[in-house]
Length: 223
Ligand code: GAR
Image (cartoon, rainbow, N blue to C red; front, top):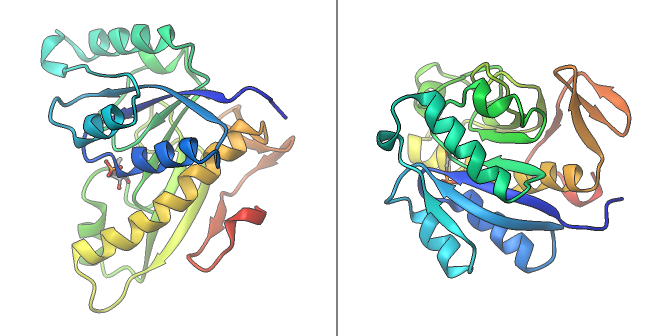
């Protein structure tokens, strides 16, 4: 098991509640991570305030300051290279990344998406889950590849949709599960339990063809 904490950069665009979970897990020693930097694509992202309060380096990289998506990704890559990041965590980072960034970081970028992938790729997943009358919704942690929300899934949490659910109530329950499974996936990576090879998740040397699936009742400590 690696003895050094995992060097992590977190990319955000907004509220940063998932970032806060990582900050809390780092400060209590529950996760062996060292958040080297937080980078936001928006200047008003509340996650920047969270980083500041935690004494973590943070900066904004605005898309409008770059002539193209590739130029933005090049600048992002240069910033992250400085921190020698072992892992890049997308935590509500609302941009599609191009191969300029992803190729050198292949297998080192993960994302949380609010659906049971491959269902509901893209935006507005809670609205769509309700509109489509789904009985089950949830969230997925996956490796990021250049295909949108289509990288191999590490772990998912199922959330039943209740008849009385509105977008806000469903989102709240899904996010509660995000705060559980995202640190779980990062723990597995920090412990060297999982990696991405050949567009597939490998866990403890074995090909994991299907994601690990949990529910709100499961105890994740023993996974
Ligand atoms: C999270 O719920 C995450 O699932 C979603 O953005 C939210 C960010 O919340 N991500 C996506 O939709 C990515 N496609 P946060 O800023 O409070 O962590």
